[in-house]
Image (cartoon, rainbow, N blue to C red; front, side, top):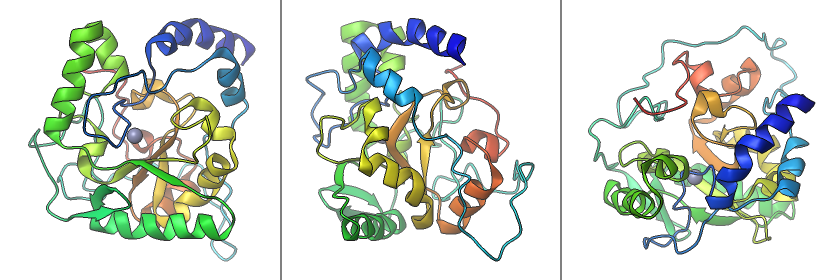
Length: 266
Ligand SMILES: [Zn+2]
């Protein structure tokens, strides 16, 4: 692990100096980012290395049998219909059509989400607040056209290679599904690796599945998901699916749904 971590720092630091991980454009403004949204540091990486285990296998279900670590992949899900709650979007699985826009978007706390995701997210935010965790909504649905502008900005400013690190190509962003959102806590750790160590980040890691969300890009799964650790990026898949995911021991939706890794674009 020490060697892996040392290697990760060597690999990661140049990237973080520019921007990181995120599918970028994380601000809720529609305008282009005026700053690297996810700048990080070695110290925050160290904190992240101590972060919660990517597997959220701390199921609290009492009655159900012990989860089997081999209870995935589940291969009967609809991963391709754009309105499916189990739609898989990553660097190997773009939206179809590329400029897909959900038909059930609703406004919610300053962003847009698909209706079922917004309803669940409201319950999540209220539950957190009742326990003293004040969550901020940083980003929700982003349209194809918004992503065209964001990606183009990175491409023109830093070149395609870095653009593909910092930003999703249009049609490949999970935010375009209307089922993904970024949450923060107003601390200096918004959209940064150290968010995982905040009370809000820890609460989300433990509780988000109860509301149908998964932490989409967990620690050390970037070779599978195609994105660096983003403890603030939640994806709605529904409560039953999130419970099954948590109990399965899978560490990415790619693994859980048997879709194969998606480390980069074709
Ligand atoms: Zn995000």
